[in-house]
Length: 528
Image (cartoon, rainbow, N blue to C red; front, side):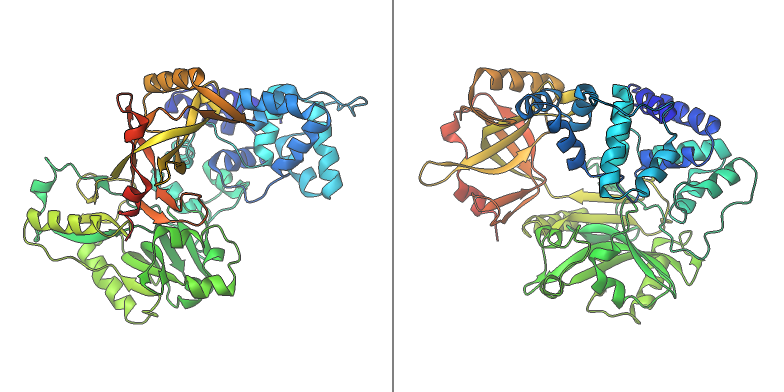
């Protein structure tokens, strides 16, 4: 754990991506298996288990520190693991260790413990650790690690160590499991590349650039590009063979358990790319309808019946084991249509191509998407000759999203942020007036403003405090935010009766009186 703690400490306090990658590469080259594999999994977010629950560390803390003092400390520091790491008080009769266990020894010990054993082992480790080591343990144990390295950055380190293209590592990645000993044997030149031919594979996705209306629209003609609706679901990849089927999120997370109805309906050997949606009595449901099924590991039969899954495919990457990514988009769509003939078309459809002759036609269609109240996010425009390349290749695919909705809302509550923002009030709850003159909350936002604006807002909040509710600070109802959001929907979970999709601060209206902010009825008009 000492080496792992030092690694995290260095990575956390290093800003440059290249410098972080150099630090990680050095650790992987000088650390033995399986420690380096577990460290890699922790940083890349591929650990599939918790060593202990977050609430356990919190309950241990309040046993040895006044709960009110702990809450005040937590509020000031802004992050639970850091608060515990700094404030932990050693037991009266600690069980001292001659040395800290290695990372792999720690994981094995936790996995072999029962509930009480986990509690005792956690206390023993915390008693024998320094604050940075405690922080590393607590982050590892609850899979809450955030040190500014993406999974893609981690894979780039591995690719550089082996002197191969990043795509080689990307394709191997989801066929392997931590602690990746076979991967490191290959990187070290001790064995051949791991064989993942019999595994269900996730392939790195191709992404679109936001369209530049001045520069990019002139490239687009009906002869060179396809246009499709951009649905407001979630991007997924269905990967299936004769034995099993998996559904992967855009980031490669396996979400198959949440959508057993879709898994059961798949009867092909292919990898297809598309949008995951759900159906309702009225047709395709909103993202809010879909979210009722997301993160439910075992959805009830009732929920599945009320919100059945639907996949809208727009690309095919592999068919019967053959790689199709080097084909043109038009040729891949032709293969996708052939596949579609043999599947359950109630649950699997193909994204339709929209006919257009001029850019003005596209503008009209984008305006139509804007009237869908969030069912459609806008348009996708794709080069017909484009091959399927992971990442975001230039001028291949464009996304032309609808303009966001804007409303003037009043700041009601604020909370301190986390990490580097822990000293500032950076999380804001805002609301709209109802007919009775009440201000009711409609959403929260914590981005959309500059660092300088954050300091100004924080200063205003400190000068305009009202009541305090734990970590939440009520403020005078005087500051107006122009809030941007993608769509709105009716919600029984909120007192206002509404919820926003992807709210963010668009402008700070220092000049506008709160009495002139929008009304709830203005928001209701956006709901169809």
